Length: 268
Image (cartoon, rainbow, N blue to C red; front, side):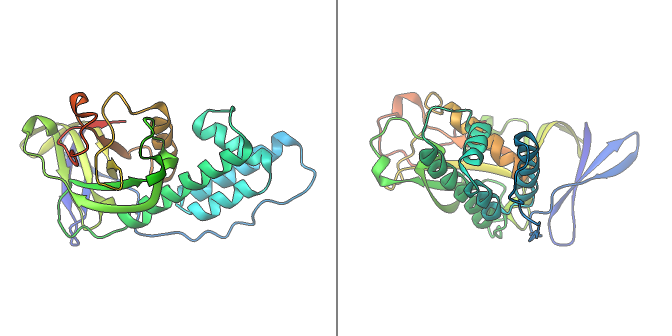
């Protein structure tokens, strides 16, 4: 796909599809307009199970698509069946108790809301497209070798990332906006201002996972399947074009507690 990138009067990047001298605006999600939905909720009654599940999944999809994470989580408090239904849908696991499922889902939805409020909707004073979300693991989990999305506190710190190694961003063209959620990464080649794009990411999430000592946790080998499932869940709120990258340290530094940031990140 051939695209052009311009900016509006507020400095927000705009994408245009270019084809044989003609341009067509490519729609992007407006993350800065929050929709406070007022749906009728779920009607309690003796509905057939399959109909009940269809309705509740539809309502969940609507609440996530409008980034109403709090209202989305309320659906999980209806009954045990709802907890099981969505935990399995998100994390593909049936082997934990319902109470543990509810705890993990609560922290998952809190993390999604934190990312939305503290990063996506936050102003970008650096005017850089390389800003990371730093998430801190609960201190009680510090010595656990496995780290999960629900192990991290529902608070985020945004920090600018510096990349000196040009190979890290080979064929990645970065366009920041006035808010972090406006940032666009275009993967592809450029010729005379026209980009032959293979992948377009908006918004872009560069995630730093650290302990309370700011020690970077992941290596490429230690990122488990639940992080892929978590980012797939987040795309239900932020769109199919959302790009997720996790900063990692080299395998030889796995036991080194003094590594806080690197220039190495992988896409998930």
